[in-house]
Amino acid sequence: MRIIATFCKLEPVKFVSHLDMQRLFQRAFRRAGLPLAYSQGFNPHPLLAFATALSVGYTSDSEYFDVTLSEPMPPEEFTERVNAVLPDGVRIIDAVDAGEFKASLTPLMRSAEYDVRFAFEKPVGREELEAAVKALMSGSIIVDKKTKGGIKPVDIRPMLIDMRLLSCADGRAEFTVIGKLTAEGGLPPELLFRALYEKLGVNAVSFVHRKSIEMDWSMLK
Image (cartoon, rainbow, N blue to C red; front, top):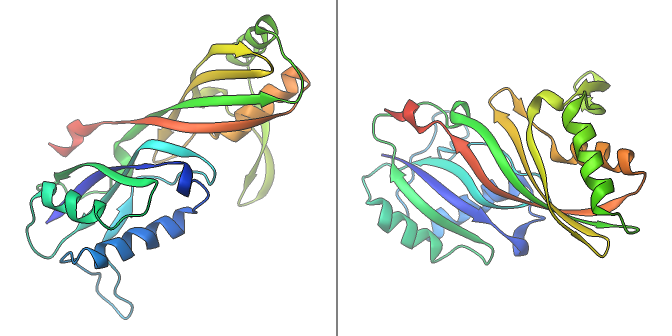
């Protein structure tokens, strides 16, 4: 039986890496006494896979994983048993039976929406911020990105769907950012922020919360 679960990752665990999150869930499954299915080979491991990674320091309301059990279990029981042993800051929000769907969750991803708050090192006015966002939305956004071949300039504008200023006061600002997120890659929010800082000529501390990931669930059918 394969279960697809939605979970949140909040402030207490925002600096836990993706690899450590995998280990965290594996420990939780064992503590919950789940009948896990394991891979074949010399080093068997639980059949657990995440749709995508979340950057260290980010929080989220909408992350996905799938796990395979060796015996049937109601998704409600799965959720209750795992939540009872998870640490503060991590909770399973929903779980469903994947049925006959066997493929990875990653190809189902389409986009992600982020709530982003900035604390600028000096006051920045609303008009200045709106002008910077308009400039970013209207042309190429060339940034240096680390790749397997080294640091290369890339245009991340095609990956940016929308960026809207929600509030601005006392050197702080809040934005909604929507970017593409697919199996081929997605918008790197931190590179978008770097481009924004360059437009403004000022640095800031950013706080990023992934509100949702748009998934094409029709592919499950």
